[in-house]
Image (cartoon, rainbow, N blue to C red; front, side, top):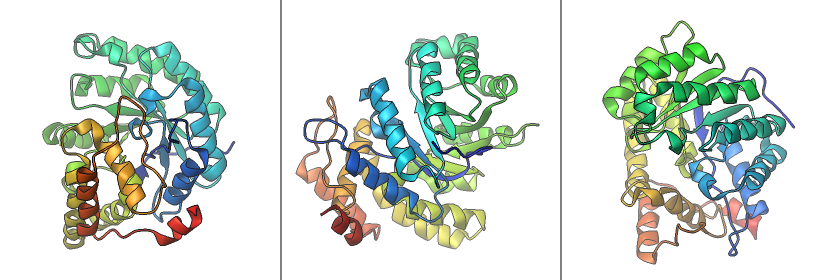
Length: 319
């Protein structure tokens, strides 16, 4: 399997969705089509698989291996792949890391274990260090810390300790509130060994990028990667007039993707792909359920308002 050596997570990184059949089995051909679409977006620097957007919570170890293998075979020769490490136990996380290493991943996105809830992550930061050291001992791949915005958020002191004690940590995917997000950008990207902060604050992406984030990693990129690339480049070149125009377009999509209930965000993105002709069906695994047609209609209106048209070439390829 292909591997991009010395890969540094930065730039625009969509987190891929996952296609299912009506019987909730992985639809390999539609999943490959999605990977191909994302990899062909000029300016995309990598693709993330086995993340929230691919319903990793509902996928077995073997299915996660299949998903990464499909991505490696389809686009891995020319697109770096980031594999999510989603596990409540550190030993299982290390097993997933070894699997991803063997199947050609170029970096790992490490989710905080739910087992560190109930005060563990705040009062026992050594748990986080133990978790990351287990993963780092299993592979030399670059690691991305997934910084949540809730009770699973690491303190800044813990983030700094992780970076200092685990040299393979190369970036932080930051879901923090604005004040903490800006602090993370200023501090973490200025360390003696800087680590990139990747925004995942898709609901206020322009503000986040203007703060100085060196990239973004977002499930919304499965739908609006082109807009994200243009926005990132506009901010990088200090073209704020263009950036504000692009943010106005993105606002229409983020308004429907991230409304309550928040847990339906990727459900809505799947419906958007169907509306755009990039996928045949929007099937989610239980306990997620199909959206009502009234909400699908709202997504269609948002795509139209954002100026995102259906992809006829993609639709034709699927027929």
